[in-house]
Image 1: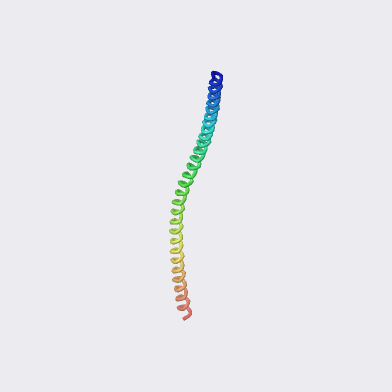
Image 2: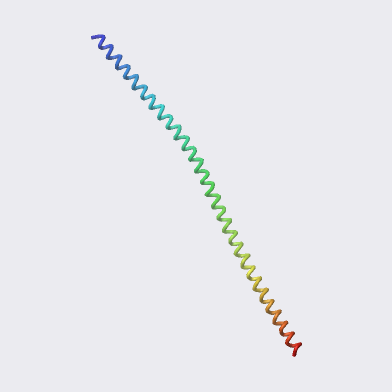
Length: 106
């Protein structure tokens, strides 16, 4: 009877050790998963920082682009005005030359 009790207790101890080893293995697996998850979070944090910086750069570049478009529009308007003034001056000069030629020929 004592032998059976000892064998039973020894079996229980072995079973307990086996369960403890499984729990330890599971804990190690969870630890590895947590490390990998931490590394992924760190990498994604860097990626998010990069994306945020790119968004800020795009915003700044868009503002600069809008300012350049306004400048270009102003330059184009001034250029058109100058062309119109030159055309008016050319027409006036042609009229004056025509008047001079008509008066000399008459």
